[in-house]
Amino acid sequence: IAMALLNLPPSLRYKAENLYLVSVIPGPREPSLDEVNHFLRPLIDFFLPAWKTSTWFTRTTDHPTGRLARSVIALAINDLQAVCKIGGFAAPTAIHLCNLCWLQKSDISNFDCEGWRRRTYQEHFDAAVRWRDAERKKDRDKVFKEIGVRWSELLCLPYWDPTRFLAIDGMHNLFLGLVQFHFRDLI
Image 1 (tube, rainbow, N blue to C red):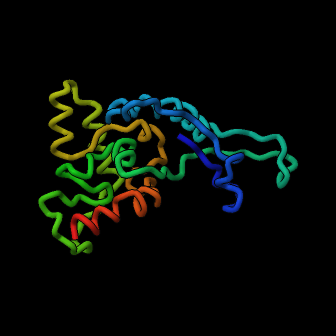
Image 2 (cartoon, rainbow, N blue to C red):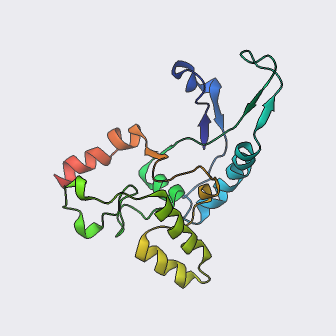
């Protein structure tokens, strides 16, 4: 997990010396849906108070008398599997295959995007809480199958909206397979 300071100009933002390595998820396999939350928890433990109570900088270049600052995770850019895992969404092969709308796998040939009902933060949050608060694994599995949503530790951040703050990175989307797969295997 790496982070970039979005306050820096784009020309400096992604230089190696300006990136912050937060965590490395060990192999040899990637974490399961539930395990990924254990890797997110320390990040949430840092960003939650950084948002709620802020940080006072006694002096900056532009503010010699000091400035209050808040820190947020404004965007998470991942491959498609990671978007689903950290956002609490079902996999793209599941019945509820999209993290942006409520289109189901049975309607995959519906290309009228104007008719797709967009997911909302509140719907996602309520479903995730329902999954989290289920007492038995069997109940969680039922909620997940029915709605395609599970709890993500990122939902502890009061500003985090998984329906708007997640993006699939260009390398995975364009070069390593998603677009290639669609053109070669689906079309």
